[in-house]
Length: 317
Length: 255
Image 1 (tube, rainbow over the protein chains, first blue to last red):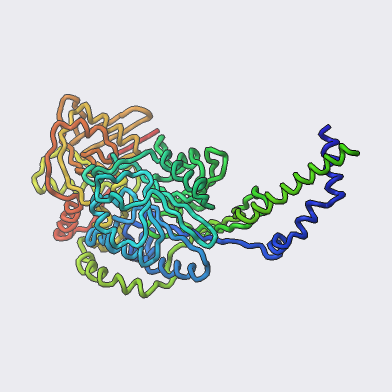
Image 2 (image 1 turned 90 degrees about the horizontal axis):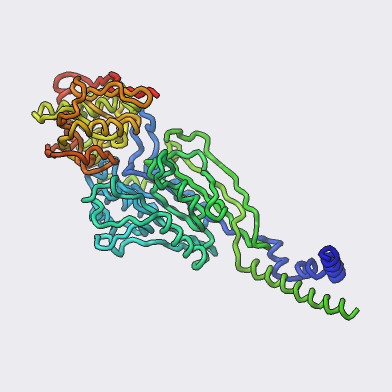
């Protein structure tokens, strides 16, 4: 029965040529086939820059001569000249690590990130090193949003100063960004995090990712995460978040200062792919993910991933 | 014939439906078709943005004027490693030496975890900047009074973490058991109270040293961890010495 039905359907289609003819003569579909429209989006990212404003000094140590905000600035401007749609993101630990932070309290780090045109950042544990007040004091110097999806800052000086998520529009693309922070107890002194409440990272990430993907219909959902890449012990990490997540496409990691040679691709709770990428620390590397979106004829399209990794990457973890 | 005709009409409707839905999907849905992941190392091949360099120059000049001061010289580059390293031994011993000179009483020291040692020290001149980058935090040293029975817990923490910076504390582990545990070169006495020199950060629960929760007393020294290191460096320089820390097997972990 099934066989004969499908046969008669095929005969019918052959006879009237409805599908193929319809597609061929439809004016706007054919014009699109002639010049397929592609939207390209370039994500640039840093993590754990740790007040590293100058390059590492030429003192013979491992990272001698690497990094530097002025070089990062020119690289970013060059990419912005080449690409129409760029998002520049940071996954936290902006503060602490050089005397710039001890002397100026993070003012210069935030001012420079604003000059470089960062679109958003999340908070790392060291961003609390001068207390919640120490960060909120520098916030007026930021012309970009701080995204925190799992810190509740009520009754602190950061109340109403951060965003649980942000939607960015680039061309026809909508990109949702969330920010996930690490548990502060045991890592940051109580006097520094004060009344900040740490909320379950996986529940919060999934809540806002669903809102962004389903309700806001974002084409891409990015999670800035300061959880850390992975741990020996059963501590929540980017790997655990990735596996238990839904609706997140990319996790830009931090905290563990991991120099990943390539992103790790894991299956999320729905069996869909989610990528984790982290590029070391101290502004030694600039991470980059280029996304190409097409107006597809079918909703289901296979996704090809190609890797372009620069040759001389640091192996330090 | 009649039946077939009806079927055909139904099919036609379905087919038109398919075309319409395809049209809508084409019109409104962007689908991810390709991703390239890459990273660029920030090195000297990238020319600095002069506007940015100029922008932060006043901050840099002011910082350099104080931070370029040379404190001492090191015979070699000191880097982190576990279970012990010349850097971790230097860190712990330098702080112990300063506190002893300042007449602070303690039995052994664990002034930081390995993660609290933030960078390496270069060979040659060690500047104030290096000291700040080695220990950027504003933590102060404290003395905790720990029951002898909690020292084993502390030893377990050190073992689990693969070794931590200590002074006056010798720990040898073979397989699953502690074969040697000496404080001030004396075997551990479970009934004794020991004074450990550590940081307020660790004493307040930082890095999860649960043994420190057993402390029966805490004394503040009002000395910053970093300042104790700087003081040691300056004293060594004044005495005409260079930094020359050694590995001495204070922590041995054999699986």
